[in-house]
Length: 335
Image 1 (cartoon, rainbow, N blue to C red):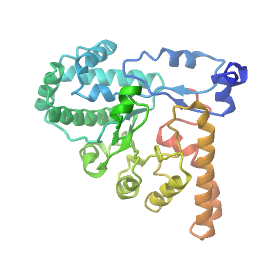
Image 2 (image 1 turned 90 degrees about the vertical axis):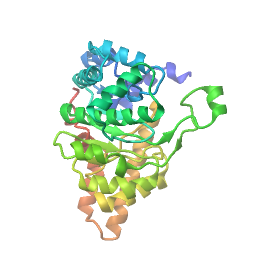
Image 3 (image 1 turned 30 degrees about the vertical axis):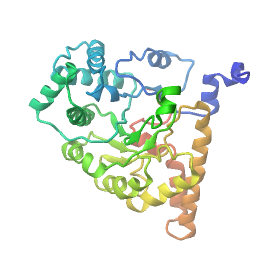
């Protein structure tokens, strides 16, 4: 606490000390993003802080507050959301607002990555039922999967990269939830089936030149069995960094070994951090670079890759690769 009062431990000072070039926040679709606009206009701040569109709760049609949430979305977009078509237009409007304020991606973390489509008539009917607070659990799931597919369609229009972090059962312990509230731990992985769940999405927009998605998992087996083969054949699919086992050196090495034979390195996201602890960022990135070097050195020692290729990869993976995957532009660009 005492250190945080010193000038060298202020957020901007640490931002510069850590040599962060791009930091993305996670933001509600109705946020006005005023702090982002202020930073972008501040000539004294040379770093780049961008928003990320996170619409999860606006897709969960079974939530008791779904009517209030959609009302707020409509108000922020200036669109009547009493119909599904209006809701869809409000989503389009808010995504474009985020993109115009620097966003490069959207983030989605549902219990499954389902994208099965409904007929237009069924989607409208279920949305009306959800707005009235009269939708069953199965129908709510079906509508959410349809709406995630709609997010993919919108991504093919506006170019925002769609990232998916599915299959986590949060607040597993009732006792801890009642004592401390939501999202303080006891988040446990559940089985995920990317192959079948995102097939509708990929058949819909997977070959669209403007669509791009990055798939994450906390189940290591999914990387080699599902994500790597999908990213190996679909030009729009990339394998995300090892989310949530990101702090385990052995797991990160297993990740590289599990996907590299199938994908190489240009079909991965590069190392991107996902932390709530600002001061962990340099340690995590340093560890990732060291482990990539360890992995590549092993391939050189086994005569499976040339030294000059390994030297190039170890330089491009931590910086150039994320820039290309997330369309961040060249180094030094603020907006």
